[in-house]
Length: 261
Image (cartoon, rainbow, N blue to C red):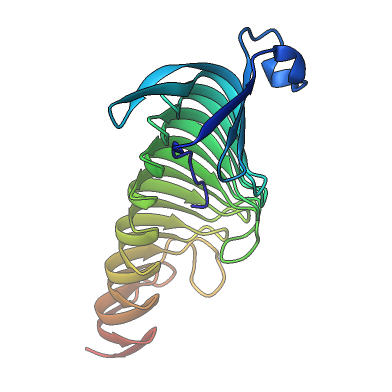
């Protein structure tokens, strides 16, 4: 995550106390606005108050204000003791933005993050990381199709725990995620009507699972395979039940092919 938050600097120059120098609409009707210039070239326009830093009483960003980094990134929102606290909007120079809750200088609570490549996350945060329930909408059309969507549990900035993923072509997955990857028990429903319920590993069918065929093409609708899978293929012990003639192939499968009982 590219969001970098404000660290109090030792040198603060208060160059004005009048809101007339501030023409930003965000500070309209805000009282007691000051301008602060920092030693690294960043600027603060907003309300101020006294706070204690390293046992010294000094003037701090406190109240409503705008902090602009020398490189162009900007935070607009509430401050407490020189740090973002409360509601705010952070815009990075590269286009990434976050609007929501801040606590002690970090993203904490709920909010919306929009990334330069169009990804959009809305949900819970803890110490600058996605944590709790959240929804990610994909826009880059890279690994996932554009407008694919994940909603579920997050931990340590990645999808972890129970969740739901939907692709724009209608394919869906409901189940467990580990570090952003489908791992554990889950249910995958495919656009052609097939339904798999069982184990996943590394985003593929791996372990024991049941596939029910509904496409009416290679297998008559309702035919099913019950058994072991490896890398998305029927592989290991299992049985294939054909609905049209009642045939059962029970035994060993290798790379989707029945090799014998």
